[in-house]
Structures are given as structure tokens and as C-alpha cells.
Amino acid sequence: MSSTSPLQFARSVAILIVVAMPAFAGGDLSAHAQAMMRSPNINIPSRVPSINPGTAMRVPPPTGMALRPTLPNARFAPNLQASCNPADRSVSGECLDRRSVTGDGQGRQAQGRLDKGRSAKVTQRREPKAAAAGDPRAVANEIVAEIDDGLSIDQADALARRHGLQRISSQRFPLIGATIGLFRITDRRSVQAVSRALAADARVRSVQPNYRYTLQQQSAPPVEGDPAQYALAKLRLPEAHRLAEGANVTIAVIDSGVDLKHPEFADASFDAFDALGGDEGPHAHGTGIAGVIVSHKRLMGSAPYARIIAIRAFGMAKKGGGPESSSYVILKALDYAALHGAQIVNMSFAGPKDAVIERAIAAVASKGVVMVAAAGNAGAKSPPLYPAGNPNVIAVSATDDRDQLLPASNRGNYIALAAPGAEIFLPAPDGKYQIISGTSFSAAYVSGLAALVLERNPALKPETVRTVLTGTARDLGTPGRDDLFGAGEADALAAVQAVVSPQDAPAAAVPSAGLQTEPAAARELRPAPAAVTEASPAGDTLRPAQQ
Image 1 (cartoon, rainbow, N blue to C red):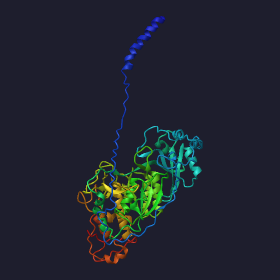
Image 2: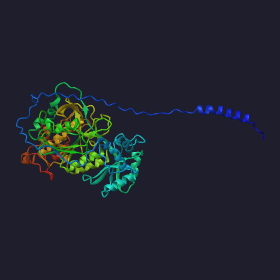
Image 3: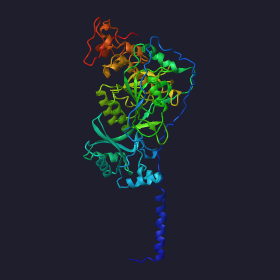
Image 4: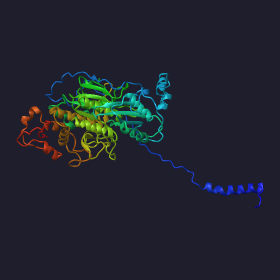
């Protein structure tokens, strides 16, 4: 074996390096990045028309309308969730329960530092950035879980610590017969990973994301003329109010805050419940939805004598944007509505399909409550949004003053009927007024019409109320039922005329003219010619519509 001198060895290494460099240089060292384009939000301010106090409403109240009785002042239900400062509130709006602690036992120490004004540092530890992008439909780092009913608060906190979670809130919901907890992930694990681990715990029944819900409104551009009355004429409300105005019917409105002091609501019957806590004031959406139903000063609501349970379930998002809610808060709102006598629930919001809310809606339906929801403002290509997509819910699309579909309105075979929702003139906070659009307001009109029907016969079942509203609707678009307007545009006068009031039942022996759509269902419910239809055990009795 020949020996190699140091000089020869160094030359050999240099040659090898030179030969190897092209191999490294030929490798692909570039990185491919994917970008997701997000549609911009276009905010067009609503036009706030001025009203001359000396000018009367264009369409006068119908003659023969009974004088309005003095109704009780608004009553406020005790808030089950204590008020809290924004720094102490979760992403979904819930007040943080400071008795819970994080997995490393630092919760109480963090609370002490909060009291000393170091909230920013604590917030950074309690709300770490997610390791990967989560589901945009859900609240980041929050999960909803059904836990054993027998768990105490301390045991629920221990369960949370065991899985590296913070318990934000938990309570038993009689509506669904379950105890539901809202938990926050305190480390960088994904919602999916935490959900799998938590679901394997023997004390946990189910786990899901805490889904987001948004209100279904659009700002409207200025329009020519005063649009305040076009919806009334389309729905034939002044004529319908000669027969019913929603008296003794309770409607739960799950929405943002309502300005109960607005002049349009003077002497109206309100109960109020805050499912969020905090000190946010009234909001334009919630005030507008209540105005669609019970306005009665310069404007005319669809059911001005109805009693409203104003449930605040939507609060302004921390990072800007419109009001938002979540699965847990919507569950609280539905639970409250069902336990406090709501006969109708108006849900002018939309979100993804949600197991816990689907369960709650089924429970509400089993109690004989009519549920109405906005179809959504996601446009023609959107999949069904919820709760409108649930078969127990009356889904409503939006029309304009020319009976055209609002372009943003969702469509599909789940749409039950349509109602005006474009450029609607409504109350706004601080005694003001607004012009606003969206399927939210179409749904509220239909909730009011359902109240008129139930005033005529309070014993009607939800499926019968649906049949009355769809069976008397005015056909639009393609003849017969379609995916844009459902059965057609709602007709208040035809609907109340189609219902036999219990005291008027003996006078219903008239030849049947039939309902205008859904003939199979209508034939089962309309009276036989020249005879009084025998009421079902629930009192479902209809008489022919007079178009």
C-alpha cells in the first residue's frame, strides 16, 4: 500500500468538493406557498331617512281596528351569566369562570396579576396562537362537550385540567336534558386532537367545535321614494290586522340587543334575557328585527300586539366585524325560549350544520313551538345554511318591491316561502330609523304572520302553521314550488282567512275553495264541503282561503 503525502490528500479532497458541487446546485431548493384569497367585505352605510313628526303614515291604520290596550312595561329576566369586562370574556362572548385553572395550576396566579393591571401578558398565555389554521366556521381554540350530569364545578374543572383545558362555562340545559360545557384549549394542540382525547374520557358524552353564527343583514344603498310601506302592501297586512294582530302570542327573538326604549315599541310587551353578559348596548339588527314584528307608531309591524322575548345572543366580535354568536350561546338562548313560553322562535342568523343545535331544535319542535329562520345571504352557490336547513324550521328567502329574489338570498329545496327583505324601513337604536336588507327581515315578517295564525287558533301544531303559510302563499317565479321562493310570497290576509278561530268553527260550513299550493297537505286539513271539519285532538282546523 503506497503512502499518501499530506499535500496529495488535500488535493484529492479539493477535487471531490469541486465535483460534488454541481450535484447540490442541481437540487430544487425553492418553496411553493399557497395563498387563499378572501373576498373583501364591502360596507355600505345604511341610509337613515328623516321622519317629519307631523306627517302621518302613508297607509293609514285600517278602519275598525281595536284600540291598543296598555301593555306592561319591559321586564328583564335575571342574567344567568354574570356581567364581565371585555378582558374577562371568551372569544364567543362568554364571561370566563375565574375559578377554573389551567393545566399548570397558574390560573389563580394569573387572576392576581390581572387585578394588578397585567392583562395583556396573561391573555397571551391563556390564548396561545393555534399551531395550524382551524375551521373558519368555528371559534378558535374552543370546544363544546356534553359531560356527566353528576359532575360538580370542581370536578368539571379537574376534568378540564386533566386534558389541558380551561372550563369557560358549564350548565345543565333542561331543553335537551344534558349538561354542556364550554372549554378553551390552553396549548397549541388542534381542536381535532383535543376533541379525540376528550371524547375518549368516560365522563364525556360528545365533543364538537363551538361553531360561529352570524346575523343575516345587508346595508342598503339609497333608494327613490319611501320604502316603508311596500312590504305591508305585498303581505296584505293592513287587511289581515282586521282579523288578528298577534295578541296573546309570544315570539322569542334570538338576536343582538334591542332598543326597548324606541318610540316604535311604546307600550309593547317585552321580556328581555341576556345570554352573553357584558355591557353592550342595543344594536341595529336586533332592534330592526323586533321592529318588523311589533312596530306600531309610525310604522306597522307584522304582529304589533305580540309579546316579544328579546334574547341577546349576538355580541360584537373582538377583532371587528358584525355581531357573532356561537353554538354554546345559541343553545342557552333556545333553552331559555323553550322554558319561558315561546310559541314562535325567530332565528335571523345562519351558520354550519351543528349537532348540538340540531339536537336543541328537535327538542324545541317536540314542544310544539313554531321555528322560523333566515335562509341566509350567501347567494346562489351556497350550500344550505342552518338552522334554516333543518326540516323542523320554516326557511324564508327574501324578495324586493318588484317580487324579485334578493340576489344574496340563499336558495334550495329547503326554502319554505319568501317575504320582503330588500330595503326595509325599520327602527334603529337611539330613536332613529334605518333602511336595511337581508333574509333576516323576511324571516321576521313570517314569524309575525305565524303569530297572526296562532292568535286565530292557538291550538294549531307547527306543521299546520307551516301548511297554512305555504298553502296560502302567492306563487312567484316558476309555476308551483321552486328553489327560489319555495311556495311563493307570504300572504297575511289569506293565511288568517284560512284558519278557523275556535269561536267561529260552527260558521265554517262553506264549500271548500282549497289552499293554493301543496295540495296533498292542504286536502288533509281543509273542511269538507257544506260541513264543519272535525278538529283534531290538537284543535287543528282550517277553512278555505279567500283570495
